[in-house]
Length: 507
Image 1 (cartoon, rainbow, N blue to C red):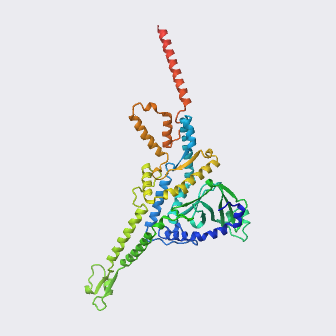
Image 2 (cartoon, rainbow, N blue to C red):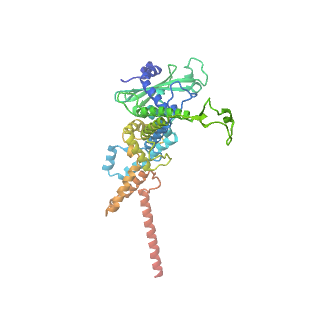
Image 3 (cartoon, helix red, strand yellow):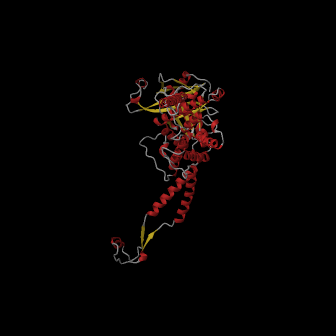
């Protein structure tokens, strides 16, 4: 799409653009509803559903357990709670400059400073419930294949848009051309200027549709808001491409499609089959649980006397006159159950329900993260690369930009520092470097004379950085070391003078 202006976007209209792009979105919405029916129906309701809608619970729980389990495994591997999922690294030009000038100490100090920024970003993620919202978006990806995250530049925090609340258009390379979001906002919460744009009288609790139109123009994204097909004055915004607060994410990328495919869609056949078999077994079990007695109408046994008799009573009658009606369906039931068990085993493998790592604690070990990452890598394959480029990397950039705008972290010169996402088996961030240093230290101890060749100040600083510990106040500066050495020499000289004075006196 060619460069566009705000005025041209407003002429097109946000609502009109939304309605025009809905037709392209509809097949993905229909598939998402089908996937939600056999997993967690409330995750993706129909367009007309509301808070009072009562959803029909699936007859099997494998789908729901699978979605929750896979989302937990993904969030554990993508955003480990006890270590950064990214690292800030200096560009090759900056590194070369440090090495050429012999500034290894300065390089280590810069690494320590970048580690402190990483920790600040992680604190922001925890304090603003970023991880909670990202985990919710992962559930949307598993069921619907699409989700949109919005990080308000002014307010901070994060908001999730489900697939039925936004439309998107991409070019042939997958780059976002335009986005239109739909927010249902209570009339009483709108600004007075926005309320004046609404012609008809509204109750305070009435929901008003607010559309936000985002469109790419060159190296920027332009946006404005609209209500009742009227532009909200003052809502115009401009964002650089790398700093736009909108992050559209997909589970499975399909070339030529603006929307992604879900994980459940790939296993929808098994999920539907298991649902039907579970429903059949439930109904058959319900029927089989009912007990009916057949009485020979021409027999001598009196039904009334038999019904009123208590345990141990003697009742006149004949045994052959009464028999229990039983369904001769045990073979069919066992065949159905065997087929259902086979499907459940396949789904358990696909959704990692039989994983060796089940814990989702606040503090998890590096080995647990590595194990989960390995399982996900084997099962999901290319999902990691998609989530790295469309979720993790944009998320880090948006948060860094947010913290820089508020002055909580220093401004990083353009092109000098870039975030690098570590996923898959490398999902341990700087902690992975610590393992490398431990190997090096073990080798150094085995080589004669190698310890004298190591700059231990830089090594110590790198070890602290690898562990994730801020060194401020812990490691002595070169000036402090020199002052302590001078002080020790002064004390030694004073003690020597006192000793020599005592020897003279004694003499």
